[in-house]
Image 1: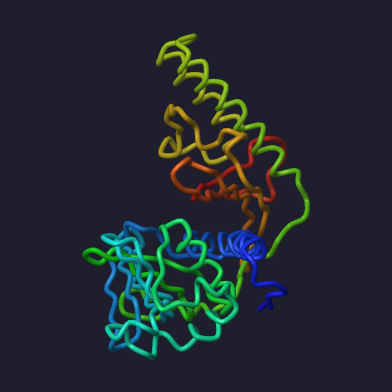
Image 2: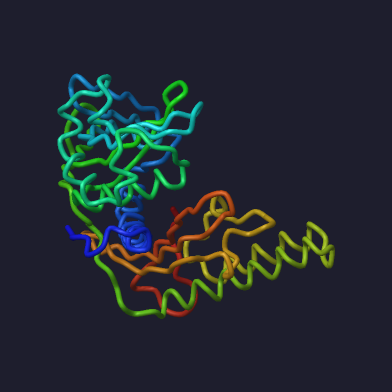
Length: 286
C-alpha cells in the first residue's frame, strides 16, 4: 500500500501512526458488524489456514483467513518472525519476507527484543501493508501470536450470511458537527465524574446527574446504555488521541474516538441517527 522513503526510526514511527489511524477504523468496522472482541471464543486451525470465532451473543460463527506476522515470547521478551518459526504453517507466512525488508535493519533479524506495544504497532503496520480487514492476537501458553485477518466469512445457523473481502470498509466523513456534539457530551460527563471524585456530590446525586446528561444526548433511552461513574475517565479530552466520523456501506453513521488509557490505547464508537435533529442523536455504542 505504501513505500518507505527512509528506513530510519523516525520514519517507522510515522508509519506506525498512519497505520494505527487506518487500522483502528478497520477493526472498529468488524466490532460493529460481528462483535469482534478479545473475549470471543476462538479456534486457530493452522492446517486449514483459518481462525474460527464463536459469537454467542449474535449466534454467529466467523471464519477468517489469517496471515501470521510472528510470536512474542513472554518469558524472554523476544519477537520471532513467523516465517522463521518452524511451528507455523508456511501458508500463513507468505507476506512476511517482503514486509520485513521495508523495516530498519535491527528488525530484520529472525528474532529481536521488543515489548508488546511495539509488536502491536508492527502488526498494525503489517496489516496496513497487506490491506487486511483487521488484526488480532491471542495468548497461547507463554507466547502471544499476532496475525492479520484477510478474508472474513460470517455464518448463522450453518449458512453463510456475509463475505467481507480485505480492505477498509469505512467511508470517512469530513464534517465535524457530530464530533463536536460528542465532545460536549463527554465534557458534561467528565465534570460530573470529577465532582464525584472530589466528594463535591454524593453517589445518588452523581448518578442522577449523569443519567440526565446521558438522556440529553441519547435518542435510544434503553437503560442498558446508562453510564457508570468512573475515574479516571476514558472520555477525558486530554487523553483522547484522535477523533473520526465515518459511515459504513449500509449508510450507518458513527463517531469514533481513540483514547490513551495509560497502559494501552483503545477505540470506541457511537452510532448516530443521521435523521435525528438537535442534541439527542446517539443510538448505540461499541
